[in-house]
Length: 139
Image (tube, rainbow, N blue to C red; front, side, top):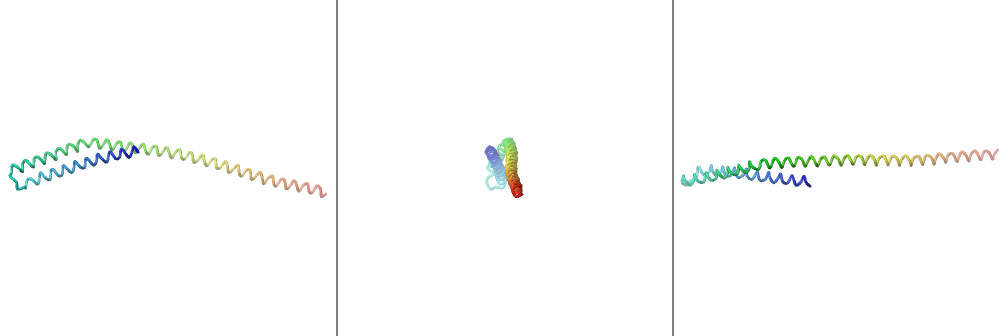
């Protein structure tokens, strides 16, 4: 949940940076287009300088967002590391629990087998004992 929130913040910062880059491009394109415009020279100069200033301001805002984007990227990386560490710990616990369950199952199976072996062993012993008693009475 925390990782998703961090990733969303990083994505939002990157969207803002991309928007500023688009404003930089648009301002510079308009400034260059005003050079060839049909308006009077003074008006074209004013428009060109206004567009160029707008592009420069967008560039400054984009530069200001860069450390924020780097910090957001670091936080996402840290969150990813924390997530993977918790996941690894959970897997380790699961493995320990699975091994314990397997040990208990094997112990149960051994007891069951020992019980069956004892039962069949006693059955054979009872049969032999009965055979010996029958031979005793037959003699």
